[in-house]
Amino acid sequence: MSNASHLAAIGLAASSGPAPTKIRVKGLTKKHGALTVLDGINVEIPDGTFCCVVGPSGCGKTTLLRILAGLDEPTGGSAEIVRSSDLPLNSVVFQGDSVFPWMTVFENASYGLRMRGTPVSHIKEVVGHFLDCTGLTRFASHYPHQLSGGMRQRVSIARAFANDAEVLLMDEPFSALDEQNKTILQEELLRIWEQHRKTVLFITHSVDEAVTMGDLIILMSAQPGRIKTMIDVPLERPRNVLELRHNHEYGEIVYRIWGHLREEVAHPGLRGTRRS
Amino acid sequence: MSAIDKTTVGIRPQRTARPAGKARPWQERLLGIASPVALLVLWEIAARTSLIDTRFFPAPSSIFDAMLKMLHSGELERNTWATMHRLIFGFVAGGVPGLALGILMGVYRPIRIAVEPLIAATYPIPKSAILPLILLIFGLGESSKIVMVAIGAFYPIAMNTTAGVREISGIYFDVGKNFGAGRWNTFRTIALPGALPFIMTGAKLGAGLSLILIAIAEMMGAKRGLGYMIWSSWETFDVEQMYAGLFVIALIGFLITIAFDELERRVIPWKGTK
Image 1 (cartoon, each protein chain N blue to C red):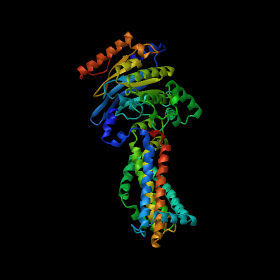
Image 2: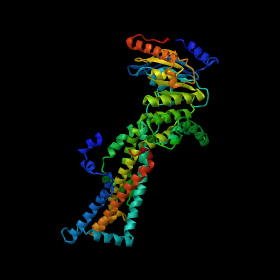
Image 3: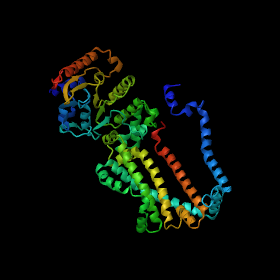
Image 4: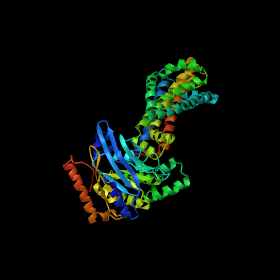
């Protein structure tokens, strides 16, 4: 496993020396009875990286996220987010409907700040900003049942950003949306993310989405869940989701990942962590 | 006409047969008022023509007279207020602990495992059968009446609250944990509001049971209340007064239902009208 060269690559891309490690996973193993969900995961993600985790269902990508979020305990090894401030370590954008039906859009988006007892004036300012970014300002006093699925997921994203955590963990946030909404929300997410460029771990089963969003892609294989390979995405930022699809380099990276996936399906026995 | 309409034809022929949906509200409302009025008129006629025994079924007009008389003497008001007072205090005294225990049981598995058998064992005991014991412990005064109401409110509210909390999707508790909601905030912002639809159902059931129990409790060693009024009219064979008491109890039950429906609309604005 050659994380060092990874760090160097990302560091060079940012042209400001190697970024410090933000997420450190060491020998992470998770077992559910006889089933090994995660088998010895080792990875270091540099600060400020938009990191996508791609893999077939059952490869343990959601479990990896839940352990990082502190919602699940590992069976062995460790997964830590390196603390660098007093802010919360992470905010999760959950898969599926996770906004509270009994709270208005504003109450939902301000949830994290309210739980920390942030002064009301600051809450109004921060939440107002992110509701603005997600186009939700008009719906601030609406309840989720009055919104479409795409709007509800925007609330979830606004809630995570407004919480101002050190790392954002996103668990297939757009998987339940239709194609148009997915594209629009990808663009919005990239635009909001550009403002602060905090470290993101973004789980997806879509190769296109991973290449569109990420700086670094972790490709996982299933049963047991292992890292198959890691792929750098040196596409320039800020990115335009629609233009990217005509980008030659984009197509090549997608093609390369599909090669790995094909290998995975054809030779499921050949596993291990290799660099592409 | 859509396919959906066609599939409902067999189930609700009267709906699809109606030409325009506009005609329904006042006609149906009229029907809803007309049927009880028609019954009262029939009852009045039957009583006046001696078709029915007026010793047991006095004419509605004479029941109304008796009510007016009791209103003038202040008797009806005093007894109604005594019952309402016990209902309100008892409902709060039983409902609040029921709500608290219900939430604790819903959130904490060990508490649920410890308490559930106690509830399962005591719930099936007819509450009316406990009355002698309650009278023994709390005496003939107000407290025994309030305790009976409290018992009636406690069980449905505790059981429904537990069910309500357990129905809340686990993802909301994950969100709470991830966004730093402590124990108290988890109760306040997730468990309580999430269980509210179930809690309201429990409160309605509890109010109904409370009304039954207060009527029974007031028949034993009470000096005031609608139950006492009904019982004493049996002793004096004042059947009109007995019916007046029954009418007021029915009215209270009806008003409680309306009040809770209104309350539900206000505290659960997020349920929507689907």
